[in-house]
Length: 637
Image 1: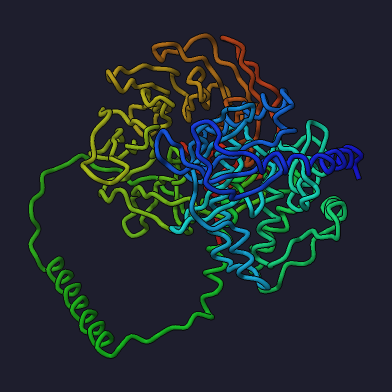
Image 2: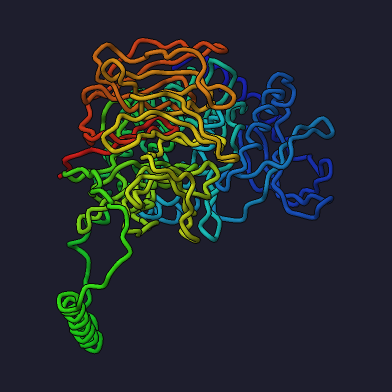
């Protein structure tokens, strides 16, 4: 065992009795009237209290005396608590105040009436909880962790005691930001925490890197979630022992016992991946794990189809169905007869609408990590093109071909469920959708009256389609700025011309030529200061150029792709520090640094081979904020 952990244990064992005696003497503190003790932990005791100023119930945690005497610790604790209070997430208990009164430090949070996960698990013993209930609870925990990790906050003490379930099913995660600075209480079973270089967390739920006192990142929370998942599904802990030191040894070197055979194989694999000793082999983010759980749930439900009990409808329902079917067939026959026998009605002549370019083979919207490993799909197999994320990345808008009429309509697909909604049903071909940053509008290209122009429709599906930019030219939408003020598009006089790249200022409809032909597939950087695009002046390369205040180009093109001359379809990472592109079926990566008006591109390197949909399109893949790729893969089985 690490000497640092044993030293902390010895010191806190000696202090625990004095601390408990002092805690028992506490009465009201500041404006808070204490009602009852509702919890005890390594950092202090938690009381149900009333805020006498607002006459509302709150939970107040009064920090232990030995914790409060360490000025540096208290300072860091307050900093973490303030950072956590800014999260404002429905699955995270809200922090109202961090204060000090009568030389005692305290933290005040919302009081959540509900059931602690530990109690729910105990009620199910000796079995584990139902898989569906388990996934529902852990998914909400992961929503909380995802928000915290994005804000740079690591929980470090995920365990059933820190998860509470309200009567309406909403899950709340407790003690965010506190575990990082907690004081140990090994005498009360297994809670160990210290400063840098020493163990932080609860022994039975800590990661191997925590147990060694090493520096940890957000993947440590993923390991802890895996332990909770294991225990919820199996009714027992994966790492056990007679003493806390035995438990810690098990965390460090032992594999957990096999998960019960009754647990679905997909869930077993997810738990096993969470519990990898090496952080690089675990899920790399809470979002990744959340997605995997959602996909596992869908897979297991579909796999269970043959075992479902099917009930025949009552006879009156069967009779009704037969009659309805006959009526529908008669109506269809009548419509066909009218179409084939009626005289032709003169129509107002329109410009010929050319046949849209649509991929021959079916595709799938497939999640792929940086190693090229497929991690599930969104929606069913279909003829997809040009997907785009909603601002919160929980939905995808995509162009989907209807094989019956050979034109595309826009559909909105849920990221985590099978839900999908048709957004447009116009006879024209509609493609290249983009979500406005405020989530209110979907901008897209439509082929109406013989030319592709730019339109928009409310994301809710309400209201008419509105024209945004009309021209006799072909205009293909490519990107929208993060402030929602600029549209990026390519333009050409006719279908066979080589396009150039333009910008449209939405407030005043001012149009700027950014890159003359041949150029296409343009992407604004997240800070809107740079434009990456495919330039075809000498082969096919990825060029980057600075964007001026009015949207006009500044300076010369800078080529960032390799010498092959076959690069296309660039995408920025969410922080702007990496640029991806496709090259001969390979996903490539270029590190990017900026210094004022200078952009410094590193050497391109391959990430993985990819069977991407072959035709040139605005979005053949997307890059999510957590660094995964959503790819339009072709030749789906």
